[in-house]
Length: 416
Image 1 (cartoon, rainbow, N blue to C red):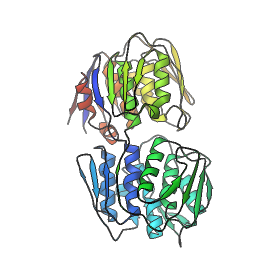
Image 2 (cartoon, rainbow, N blue to C red):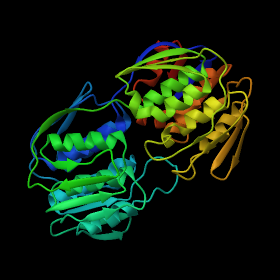
Image 3 (cartoon, one colour):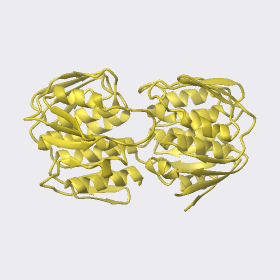
Image 4 (cartoon, rainbow, N blue to C red):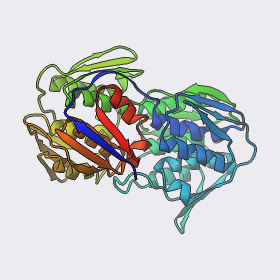
């Protein structure tokens, strides 16, 4: 397996362009199944999860090809209704195949999903909501079999504002008969992006970005061309890279309103942050002060930036608490940061960090996507050589990672 080798201790500086959002692109690509007409999606990042999704669409019967950062999806007439384990196991977002295929074919069989090892992350919220729309559900031999005689709109209240469940019900209900109302819906920018694409295809969805989304079902959707928003988690990661290496980085194609919680914490820690409508500048000017975080659903502090913040706090003089409230078992990176010399203590849902003067390079291993990002940041700041293994996790969510960091002055390379 590939490894990333980093000789740390260098201040990063320069300009980096933030890629299109993976977490927007995936549901938007699956949404193309809702129409038989051609679809063009722009600003799609080059990532393992994107490649898996394109392979998925082609397997299902939707001809799709990626040229640069544009995905062209051709006219299609017949879909398969089975999503096999070999595809689903690679990516948890594969469960989003259920909504559009249930809407179009009235039946779909999906292998139980895989993805990052950060807790159970059950899909019962999705299945309960499908039942509310009139679907029958059977779980048998590792597959979820879903069928209906025609989806009918209903009021659905989530016990938790799940992003995936909100997306799946959006994808299912746009072609359902009548009105669907989602209560306690997820408010993430990626939900708004998906909704904007669905409306561009002729759907009637209102309220995205709020806790109540209303969908008036239509009979048919048409093709569309659409550009995906920038990746807020990648943007946050590069901002923290500037902080942890005492550098100065300008982010292009970044929306500061999407990561306000992270920017606010960086400012309180002592970072100089300047923003405009599509750019963010982060500059280290003085020793940082520790800041506690507690992850929350949007617009709170994102769980996908928890690991990166822990890496920063490990090098920030003083004591801080990093509390994880969204997922269980999402502190697997803490043990690897300890190998670099961090002073961390896990207590239940929290990690208590006591900032050390410096970290030392060491061999470490990525356990999931964002844990891998945290290790890259820590190794960029550490003294000496570090080797990060299992970097295939990083390839799921960070486009051209080594190339971008190298452009900022990092001594980083991939060993195949």
